[in-house]
Amino acid sequence: MNRLSRTEGQIRGITKMIEEDRDCREIVIQLAAVRAGVDRVINLIVTENLMSCVLSDTDEIDKKQLEEALELIFKLK
Image (tube, rainbow, N blue to C red; front, side, top):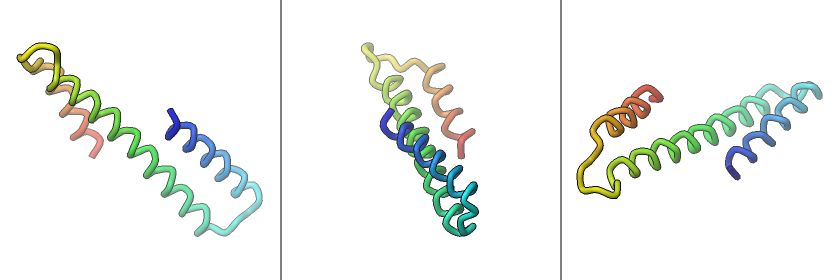
């Protein structure tokens, strides 16, 4: 949640930069930072999902859930 809140603040800042007609390079740098932040959130969510599939309460891996997690990973790349 902290990462998403930080990203939300960055986007508000970028909007303000555009309204103030700031230098394009500065805006692009901030947009790249937002992209990196979103990518980190995606990685965390997918990793947690995958770990919960592999490290379930039983010794048997839920193949369908694992396949869904892997599909997310490959679809995002």
